[in-house]
Image (cartoon, rainbow, N blue to C red; front, top):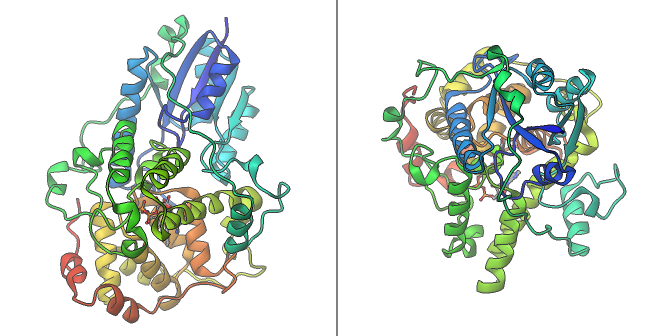
Length: 442
Ligand SMILES: Cc1cc2nc3c(=O)[nH]c(=O)nc-3n(C[C@H](O)[C@H](O)[C@H](O)COP(=O)(O)OP(=O)(O)OC[C@H]3O[C@@H](n4cnc5c(N)ncnc54)[C@H](O)[C@@H]3O)c2cc1C
């Protein structure tokens, strides 16, 4: 009788779950789906908590959704306390499992996690599933991806590549093994009682967020993600996206898929299928094309990680030399929204108060830290990691590198003129008035 451990990572869903389908294809007798909770107080090398309150709250709601989906299939989620390599080998021994399946993540920490599990003696099978396009469908030999986004996109479009059909959620799952009754208590996660480290929902209700995740229609669960997707494509918003996408505030100026994509409650293939369906029913235009274009950026940063891996995490990025310095005092003012530059400060207040920030302002504040304050792009990326509810290792690292000119931007980086940006995107000052005050900590 075989038991397989299935480790959920950034794929907290059952629809389009290629990794889970792989397990079911193995024909195991028993299945133990697991999620490993990290230390919520882990401090980043830059001196602040690595997972901020908003991101933690968002993850919690995605997990609640996953718990429900698995419970409906009589195969509950087992939640463990601690990093996978610290808990899963003992768990595997306790339940008599030797095989673990999980999604593949091509980022250094996540790869080290899998290496450590393998070194513990577990047979770990990883499945790539987070991109819209399958790596083996790409029109170049492995390792030969074009570095420049435009060439990447043009080659894909020339071949007419598209996402494969999304998989439906399994209706049934194997049950837990009997030995699960004897899992050592110390491996199990105990949810903390509400502490000062957690978001108080009552403090959030009045916040004018562009992604109010505390409202039911923005809950992190997979079912809510799929409803949001269906609602988006039953509106005319996909036809106006290109015109509105540089908005600074509001729910409708962009798709708002990213928070669900980041936890994996929504799959990029599912979106692509829905986009295709929309264009065949309602017609394509430059806005529907631009949604595809942006999803290609997401894939591009994933495949760039597959190509360059750890090099993307060097201070110099892909450049040969490092000339970089960290300015702790200026960095702290930037984080708190106290730089004296009104648009930047308003953006940083919004980020801290809600865990979300428009793409335009992410670009503006990142450029300000790097070029006006002379700061270290890696510290900025780490602050975004802590704050953003849609934090995604590939997109965050990739965008920061790109703006810093240490990645693959043929123009050698993007410096945004903050006064020009203010005139173009907040001419009437409404955004600065909305978020101008120092954010009340939540
Ligand atoms: C410095 C910086 C850091 C960023 N960090 C993250 C991050 O941690 N997580 C994240 O998901 N995005 C990140 N982005 C990209 C982008 O800002 C967000 O994906 C976007 O704002 C999410 O809102 P949306 O879903 O409404 O996007 P839309 O504008 O509606 O776009 C649709 C989808 O396309 C993808 N997309 C759009 N723009 C980009 C982009 N520049 N790079 C990669 N994918 C893109 C996203 O999956 C997005 O959900 C970052 C951008 C910058 C400049």
